[in-house]
Length: 100
Image 1 (tube, rainbow, N blue to C red):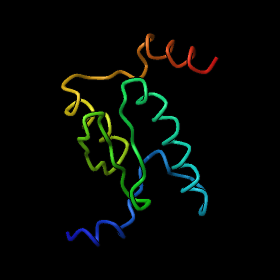
Image 2 (cartoon, rainbow, N blue to C red; image 1 turned 90 degrees about the vertical axis):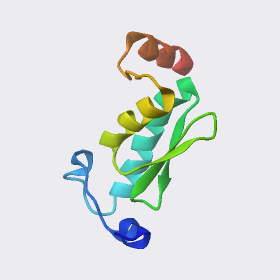
Image 3 (spheres, one colour; image 1 turned 180 degrees about the vertical axis):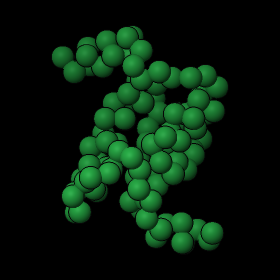
């Protein structure tokens, strides 16, 4: 598939099922905010790319094109060289402290 078709092709993810038309971009934005709260603890971030994909960025400048949220954690592990458990109690505590 050419890059242009990949951008315009619409993919659905389980997390967007049942979303009313017109609100998916808004929910996508909120999903990215939540994920970036976790990723910011390790100085990574993810951003929207054309409303169809995501770009995961490392503090070193390395980037990865992510097609769906299921791929995010796999790509993050490859970039970091080790896993990140977003439900790790230490991460949850760090997020609580940051928000207080």
